[in-house]
Every structure is written in C-alpha cells, then in structure tokens.
Amino acid sequence: MEDKILNEEQTRIKRLEEIRAVKINPYPSSCLRQQTTAEARGMEQGSATIIDGRLVSKREMGKLCFCHIQDDSGRLQIAVSEKELGKDNYKFFVKNIDLGDFLQIDGEMFVTHKGEISVLAKKYTLISKSLLPLPEKFHGLSNIETRYRKRYLDLLANEEVMKIAKIRSLLVRELRNYFDKLGYYEVETPILQTLYGGANAKPFITHHNALDMQLYLRVAPELFLKRLIVGGFEKVYEVAKCFRNEGIDNNHNPEFTQIEGYCAYADYTNLMNLFEDLLPKLIQSAGLPLKFETSDGTVDFTPPYPRVTMREIIKKYAKIDIEDYPDQPSLYKQAIKLKVEDIDKNTGRGKLIDEIYKTFARPKIINPTFMTDHPIELSPLSKKKTDDPRYAERFQLVCVGGNELCNAFSELNDPLDQEARFKEQEKLRQLGDEEGMRYDEDYIEALKHGMPPTAGFGMGIDRLVKLLTNADNLKEVILFPTLKNQD
Image (cartoon, rainbow, N blue to C red; front, side, top):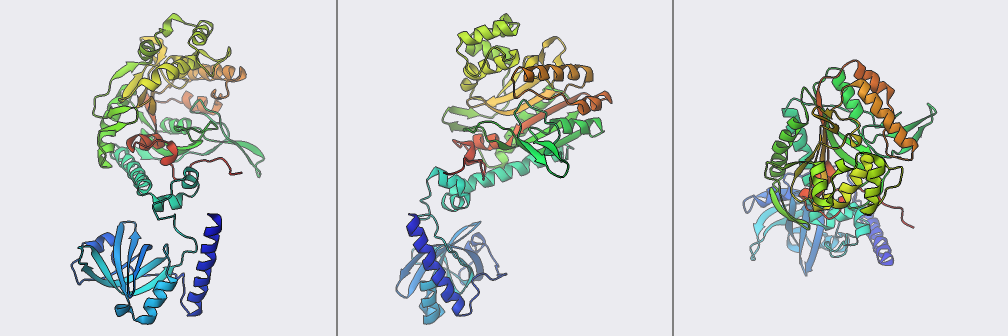
C-alpha cells in the first residue's frame, strides 16, 4: 500500500511540473466563489454560478467527463465537456486534474436526463493541487489507527465523523448561549499552575526554564473560578481544557474539555433544576431526539430525572449499607469480600465507597439519574449536609453505564473546614493516594475574605457528545485524541 501511495505521489508531482511548465500557478493565493454547492443546487436551470471545492469523483466518457465537487455544504455534479472547454483544455483536465484537487468551476446550472442537478462547466481553474490520493474508494477509510492519527482523511472519508464534529461545535455554542442568557460571564483561568487542585487526579508536570520552577497542567479550573466569586463575580463559567495523568480507555482521555461554572446565592438543588432544563434544550438544539437507543439500552432525557442518594444506589446494587461500615478498616474488609479491585489497605474510606459504586452500581444505570449526597470523604470541596454532616451536598448526573455527565456541589465556603479537609487529603497523599488534593494556602486565604453561598458544576463535553451521538469510544468525538507513539 505504501509503495502504491509513493508511486501515486511521484506521478502527481510530474503532473505538477507539467502544470507549472505551462505557466499555471497550482497554488494561487485567491479564488472566486459566488455560491456553495448547496446554494447552487437551489438555483434555476440556466443560472450562472461559480463554485469551489474538492474533486471527489471523476468519470470519463470520451469527450465528456462527469465529476463531483464537494465543499462543506455537500456535493454537486459537474459536467466537463470538450465542446464547452475546447479540445486542449479538456485534454489537459482529463490528464492533469486528479481526485483531491481543489477547483473553481465557472458554469451554468442544468438538470441531466436522469434528473440530477448539475453544473455545466464553462471554465475551470485549479486552485490547489493535491499530491497524495484520497482514501481508497473515497469512503474506504476504516482502519481505526489511521482514522485517529490522520483525522483529516477520516473527515473526508466518513460522513458520520464530520457530522459528530459539527454536532460538538453546535453543542458548545449552545452551552455558551444558555449560560450567557442566564447572566453568567465567560472567563479564563490558568492552565499552567504552581499548585494543582479542584479534583482528585494525578497531574502532568512541566518545568518553566526562565523562572526555574515546576508547574502543573490544570486538572480543573475550580479553585480559580471560586476565587472570582470571592472577588465579586456572581455567575462565571469557563469552557476549559483540563489534563489528568490517567489511563486511556473508551471514557477517558488525558486531555479533555469541560464546562465548569459557579453561581452565588444558590445550592446544589438549584443546579439539579437547571440541568433538567438545560439538557433537553441542548439536545433538541442539535436536532437530536430526547429518547434514543444505545448498546446498553434505551435512554430517555425527558425530565424529571430521579434523585437518589449514593447510599441508596450502593445498597440496591452492591447489597450492602455503607453505614454498617463507619470506618476504613471495616469497609476495607467488606470491599475485599466483594472482590473490589484497585484498592489496598491504605485506600481511604471515600475511595473505597467510590470503587464499590463503580464496581456494582455504575454499570447498571441507564436513564439520567441525579446521584446525590456523597459521603463527605469523597467530597473535599463540598458543604456538609446540615441534617447529616457525614454526607455532602453534592450530586453527579449519571446515565448509560454510569457515565458521569455532570458533577456539582453546594460549595464549601467555611475556610477552617476547608483547611481541615485539605490537610486530610495531604495525609491520604502521604499514604500513597496519588490523586489526593493538595493543600492550597492561597485558596484558604481567599475563603477567609468571605465567599457567599455558592453552587458549582462541571460537565464533560467529550462525554456529553459521545453519549448524544451514540459513539462507541471517546476518541470518536475528540478530533485529535491522545495516542501511543507508533513503533
């Protein structure tokens, strides 16, 4: 295959030389386009048009050649004839214009005998010469590794990939519109941080040469966004690139995108109401159904969504009550009996609860469900419930195999409580928990200046798009996913 492509490239370079030999610039700096292919398709017969696009099919029939030009709006058939162009120009087109070349076509709209809307070319202009062929048979790119590594070919060859990319763009735009209309301000916070925080995650580490200091790629924008609430903003959000030094699988990529936001004078119940309003609007704005089939079953985003505590969910699926195991040693023994993986004798009680949930409950959840009131050990940045301080005012919106779409809290604004929890996280880190949060002294100082009651959320955009487009793998919805180096 590589030899075939190499031979094709050499052939096209020879054609390029022939094109230049007759004083044609194969890469002009400008071109003229009056209509897209979709706009031209709607014009009356006999109307003059100028369209631009990539040549994606070419069928020679003696002195007539039928082709298709493709642009972002679709495809349109082009009829190229010796009668219209003249013998030399037609011969040059047949010999030197290849699939993949970009052309400007000046022509006239007509309909063929078979009823296909077409353009009769009066003139053609080469506006970019391609030196490598398109994927075999144009729709033949199926090798997974090639698709992800050469996404530009994947977009050309697979219409569904382009569709997903456009849906993603639309969803992000609608997310911004939704929160802008609610009075949120979009802001930016640092990606390079001197101390990472805002999530239980292992960071990427880098070094700044001029300052001779270690820096971290952010794992979440949370602590900076809440500093803005302290500073006087009441509603803020960020569409944030985040980085976590974790494994890669169908639901995880080390580099991912989320929208994270904070609203003063609100709590986590307000955010549950907000997301029941947001998600149906978001889905319908992208032209997608609220109810659709997945490999795990039928999922329905029609609100309202059930609100169930984490304790109740674990009791239902793991058949244990976490309150029967109030300390780490007793819960660890039970987790071992349940054959929970990825734990050891130093694993904190909060993580043990989370691993039990992930093992037994998460795969069983299909329809959108607000899993509420996490144990406080799992929620170092969340307020304790007033009526039961063992649990946090927190929810995760989960669905279809337990995919977490949103994580939200009533934010902890007691600086002394936050300080104590940071110190507890540091103890867990010393015992080997690489995902434990760091003690952020500056953030504690910010809280000491006072932060109003605040609700905060984070929603993964990659996972949202994966779910709504029914994609099998997170890599399908990230245009350039992280991949292992080729040998």
